[in-house]
Length: 76
Ligand code: SF4
Ligand code: SF4
Image (cartoon, rainbow, N blue to C red; front, side, top):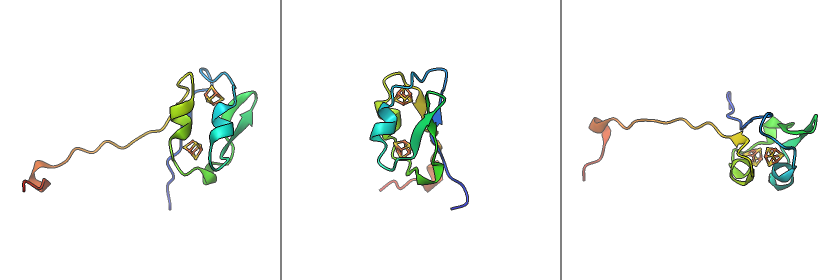
């Protein structure tokens, strides 16, 4: 895989509670300067658990939004 999509952590919002670090299934997250950080980005499987559980909404996973071409839609 040439490119990897990664969660974005807003350090201004993060309280450093550690919840995402404890729950990340691959231990991709860790503490850095008292805030959550993606310390092992290559381990991230983009499961979105951290985004879901963060109590202050400090983590976001970017998603690609695609518009379906009507001509390609299956009308059956
Ligand atoms: S769960 Fe949210 S507030 Fe807590 S350490 Fe992770 S990013 Fe920061
Ligand atoms: S998306 Fe999943 S694997 Fe990646 S950092 Fe968040 S909890 Fe961990």
